[in-house]
Amino acid sequence: MTDWTGRRFEVEVGAVAHGGHCVARAEGRVVFVRHALPGERVVVAVTEDKGGSFCRGDAVEVLDASPSRVDPPCPLAAPGGCGGCDWQHASADEQRRLKAAVVTEQLSRLAGLEWDVEVEELAGGLAHWRTRTRLAVDRRGKVGFRAHRSHRVVPVDECVIAAPGTVDALAGREWTPGAELDVSVDATGRTHASELLPDRGKLRSGKPVLRPHRVLGSSVAVEQAARREWRLAAHGFWQVHPDAADVLAEVVDEWAGLTAGQVAWDLYAGVGLFAAVLGAQVGAEGTVVAVESALRAAEDAADNLADLPQVRVFAGKVEDVLADGGLPDPDAVVLDPPRKGAGRAVVNAIAARAPSRLVYVACDPAALARDVATFADHGYRLSDLRAFDTFPMTHHVECVALLSR
Image 1 (spheres, rainbow, N blue to C red):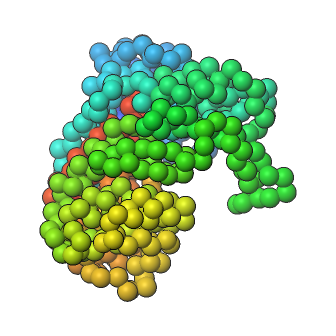
Image 2 (tube, one colour; image 1 turned 90 degrees about the vertical axis):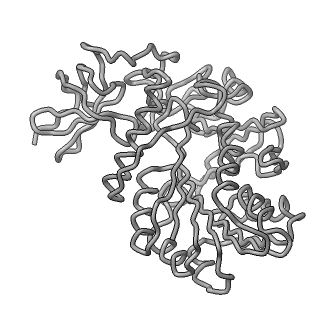
């Protein structure tokens, strides 16, 4: 088959697909098109063709525009530009409709469920929400973001979605070429940044190990959520949208449905956000088992929840801790797995203990749908679902699903 890379042609743009692009067809092949919207007619330039039934491309000219198309506020949100934002060319309402369509399609295709999804807007609008990010440094020592599906660094002076005190705190300075930069701004408004330098001679999975060197702030961030103060590693996991942690904790609080003396599991617990909510529900007579694989996060969880003796924190992989079999049977389970989802082994281990309710927090709708389908094999049904636009301008969406036995 001839390689289509660099080829240009007109296409009618079809439905949105998971990953920040839409589907078009040309000469019997699928073309995943970025910078387009459903219903448009565009000229697409093929950017990647590895053979087979599909290729990837950018809409480089719009012949018939969607009424939902807007001018991107950032000039780098364009073909050949920064790969961080997927939907700057869509209105706010259209962005949420596109994300809802993706969640609906994934549940239908992977879990066999027909579900009417609405993606809810968070406060603050589309811009300046991202409180944590990682930047790359180009060969001239300038900070930037990588192009889509590329290692190429696109230099930036500012970022539309970045919170004040993040990208603007690092741009305009020279850094070590080839380094990366972790930067966050916490609830107190303090900026924390570390330059990650390759540690010569050390490799992990064939890639250089990055050694952090703090350049701004401290190693500890202070956050506020669920009516508590949290202290955690400055670049450890925390929701990047400033309203997300509170919103998700409120849904968990509503759906966990626990009473005093009961048992809950909080799996992939991070620094203990949901464990705190569960601990308040079960009270001093109950038990919350919080499991987190990252040792520093587990230590932070134990420190943050020291006033809740009913919360027991376990450091280790979820599948390993559950396999030990020494945990009390849960009345409810909250799980917030990484992007790949919980997976069959963890789902099977949870279902074997027969909790009556599961609250599943998901940052990837495909992984959520796969795990919902596996839970269905054990007699759990999807009872409710809420989706939130916690990552405006990007294709990412956060879902919370309630499953009942």
